Image 1 (spheres, rainbow, N blue to C red):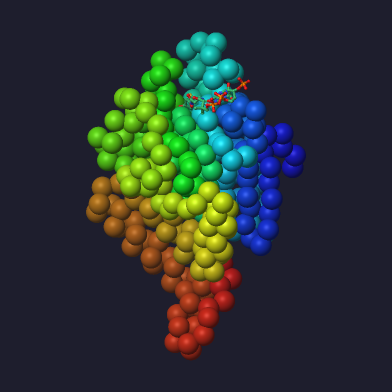
Image 2: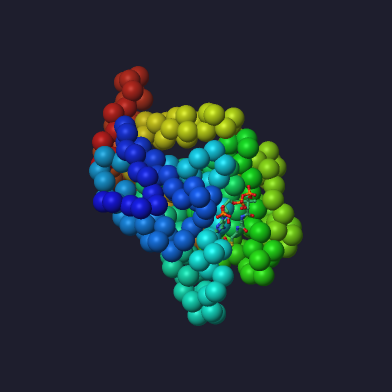
Length: 260
Ligand code: CAA
């Protein structure tokens, strides 16, 4: 498939997707969001890809938000449709079967922070910057920010970031749990790929089911979540990977998982 605003590299089971609109600091216009949608289908269907990494082109920006130039003259219905389109794509990304790592290489603002929050695991370069500056533009976040942010950091911290529009640095983002790993900028892709390799070394179906249990469980009350865990845990025992994983342990050898 061909893309105008995305670069896709696939190597050793990992796909690296780079959002590539450097002149606009990789801001998300509608065409790019539609390409992300297409890319998700492509990666999900590609049997040679086990893990997806999303990053931004250049040294300066992951994604500097939704494209303000494209968005500024929208009316209420157009604005709402734009939000619904992007939210749908971010929901789809969050619920991909395959694990998704955000490698945040610079500004992750507005829709950029919302994009990285829709990924499973976030690794930030130490020069990355985060924020939800929408209030400085007279709007609220519209790609899931008001909902995912308080689910990742404290409610008060989310409101602090949302109400002030302030930018925070990567160390602060790590401290408050907005990102999960902090690395020197020149090690970012190596760290993301290393994590992808590590994830590929374990049982793929178990990873997929962990993802489903966390994503679905977090929106349930505790007892319903625990019950859902029972279901996925039980399901694991129907897989070859469970037989292989436990047999390998008993035989003191490395497991060879088939993802079946
Ligand atoms: N949309 C469109 N273009 C953008 C953009 C955006 N979100 N962010 C940066 N650009 C463009 C700039 O207009 C500029 O283009 P020109 O060279 O043609 O003038 C180019 O990228 C470089 O940007 P700057 O000159 O501003 O670079 P800087 O280093 O001085 O500042 C920055 C960098 C602090 C990130 C600044 O560009 C900035 O504040 N960008 C906007 C960030 C923002 O408000 N994002 C939220 C958008 S709204 C949103 O995302 C809503 C939502 O919930 C989905």
